[in-house]
Length: 571
Image (tube, rainbow, N blue to C red; front, side):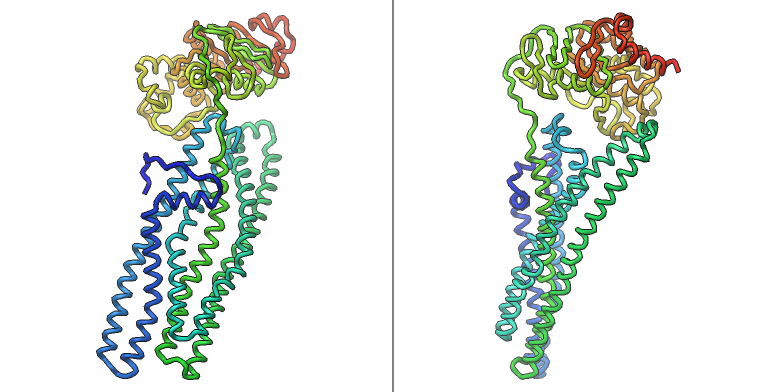
């Protein structure tokens, strides 16, 4: 089975069926073993009625106890050996499914890491969650076809051959039975693919909405929009439920036909054999063997129908995986070097010019406008931004990422110790302990470490859910400061802090970043009062620039926006 650190390989993303075949091709030995165990197990099931018929015809009917004992012993040995084969078949196929499961998880996670910041712009969180929670399991389950599925085909043909020795008519009915079943069940499998594909799409959208609601529940409650959003969610979930019922209806027909049609088919075979025995065309032992073959036929026929159902669903889910794997990160066409000296960042679309070595604030009527500007300045969105005299998209992306850091106030925090959360990579681990303490102090996060039972070694939940919102924000800021980038672009770094802590962070941030380029998006007067330059944005464009006090005196829109926040702080 695939190792946790093993390269999963390059997946074939030309289609759902091709991806399933790639999963098989990555473990040929195990799949071949599963097919062998499944085939021998199924063939020996078919051999059981034959041995039973010989025991009756050669031993029981003529009264030959030696022959009866011989054939009975062979029947026992075959049964015991087949029990062992059944265990090995199940164990091998479990490993096949687990390998496919883990391999798919690894390629999906690897693709998510490769997409990086462009992931959110190309795929919703709900789609990724749906792939990880449901599609991966369904894809792996469909690989059952390589074991019992192949065994069912071989077993079916072996029984047909054995029946030829009993009756050509019965053998012909058996051989024609499966094509008839395929014609009856096939259209339902095609309809199932369409219904399930639509259901998976809606499920992904609704899953994303659940995540959004969970993250913004407090805001919705404060704005009074909770009931409105809840009603919309109920309607969407109701539509998803109705689609689920349609999928379930098709599935129930497939499963009902998978049980009912084989039973009807096998009843016809049994009736034919009974008539032949009554007419004296076959012996009693052959009649018993036909009954045995009919009973054994239930297994391969049921496996074939079930495998068709599983493969049909697996292809639908594999298509979703493949579609995700086809996504490409933002193209890196830059080949030039970044400026060797501290230089200004200029965004012609908004008119924002960030001078080197200064603490600059972006104030916008709509916070999303300021965040959009930051995305362009950090090259997370296409733009004509220049760094010095060079366009940002002409500079090698690796140089930009090593010198310009966008610190989002909702950046992910991964589970682990607090120290690992703040220092998540080997590059961070090389920083001296004093640098960590300084970053924590600048972010006013010293008290967080002191309050935890094991300090920096205290285990943290994913997204640091065992901390408050303000504490998480300070941890994110400390992590960004520990990076010590040449240019730091911080989005709302103090929005969740109380006034006293916010003022402390603003003062320490100015001192810690002195002489280095820092941009913050905020409307807090406590932060703005400590900046060198304030750029006031209106409709995404620079309306005014100056110091905080200059803009208060000269720009009514800025004064109204900041005064509102001042009243909230004082209140």
